[in-house]
Length: 188
Image 1 (spheres, one colour):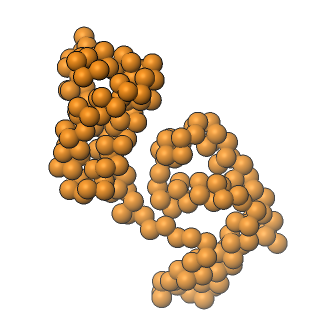
Image 2: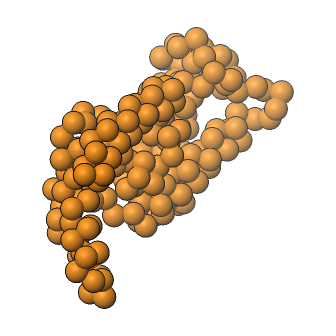
Image 3: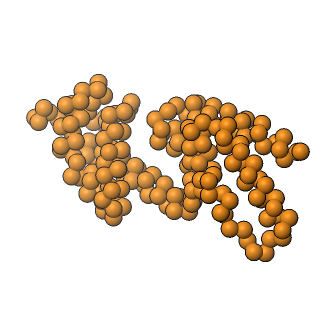
């Protein structure tokens, strides 16, 4: 396979021929890794990007077209796009601090708040903790990713390798459960 062109190897990859992907990996790992490392300045992030790039080659349905240019340029474009997505996600993650339900009672209240506001927030936190008991682990993780970590539904579906419809349905069910267990408490 070492004598095969990149386009021929990519055609085999589209047919899920693993040795073809391995050959492309051997040919381009250094290029993809060095691009990712230069962009992120972090070895661990660069490794994650390399994995994502070659996973994209394996799972891509459209693939490479020789008529549109050289394979190496196409591969660098994929690497660049994945790197940009990765950097944006990292930047977004730095803005959000995940708070797990067991830490809610330790969230500091602003000193200027009046006692009624403090008590109200404490009651809401307690009700949320109680409502979380009715959620599955995947529902809790979905709420965590969406509301506390700032991921979009599409990003969550990609991270979990699940269809977007499944994620939307899980969110709908999760919110329905939370609404059912929170609204009666708040109205009473």
